[in-house]
Length: 257
Image (cartoon, rainbow, N blue to C red):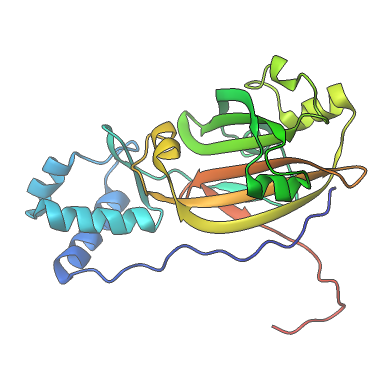
């Protein structure tokens, strides 16, 4: 199993202070989620305003708080939905997306938005150990779980490692599997950087979310069996879609807590 560097701890922004009216409404909405079969979708905002005799401003305040907590999510022009169970994203396992999702009895899908070459941005070039503006393959994909778009990912691949890879089926095949089967390259080490962020316009549109919705960023650099950095992945997840996990033995026999 490939070793990884220890990721920086990352937590979501703590709940904001709600007005008294919004706090009471939040409790009512939580009760509705607990006791009413919603089949995933909440009533329309107008219906909730009438049901709880509240204003749109107070309703939005309560709904936005519940979204930040990961209890519900919003899709553009479709309304509010109950968040499904989170996907357990085990950093140490380094499983390809489809394998990870299927192992948890969920249904994965991948859609390719763009597959081109571009000059390596400075941060990508530094991560890959190449000169800035060196041409790299740039692959943008969205990934779904049970039909819901939850991940927007931009991959940057070294062209000298993977000549002609854009000619392959990048929707149904794992990049990791392609590396191994077609190029004889195995991933032997992975480094991660984790942080909470928000979705920019392009990622939000791809995930049917509102711009600046909360997100979890996972930046990953993969190294081959010779210790060479071969690709740089920048993942933006809907923050309620995943639960990041990591189990590892400490380097010392004992440690303080």
